[in-house]
Image 1 (spheres, rainbow, N blue to C red):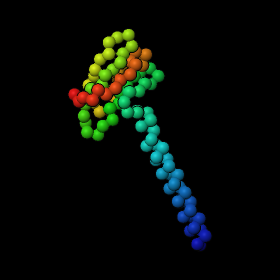
Image 2 (cartoon, helix red, strand yellow):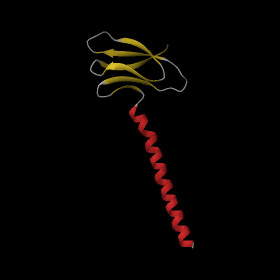
Image 3 (spheres, rainbow, N blue to C red):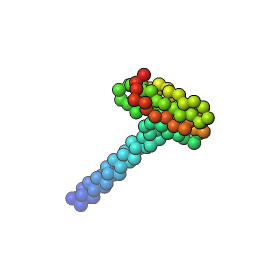
Image 4 (cartoon, rainbow, N blue to C red):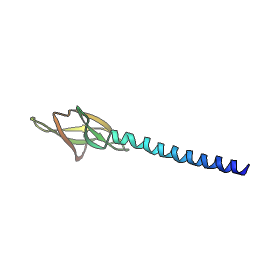
Length: 96
């Protein structure tokens, strides 16, 4: 009986370890999909304002073959345009 309990306890512990590793991997995936700041996908350019206070910030958007411009972005992901046209974006240090 004690061997059976020991075996079941060991299997339960192993299952908990694997379940917690799966939770860490799942939690890390969304962050990799939407990194903070400027990023591009295959065809689109985005700015992801990572905040928990609800603030809106001014970002300078660098545009190919056109004047750069500033844009007010709120919390979360904001589409800036086509990745072939947008060269980058960065926080200006100002709120809007």
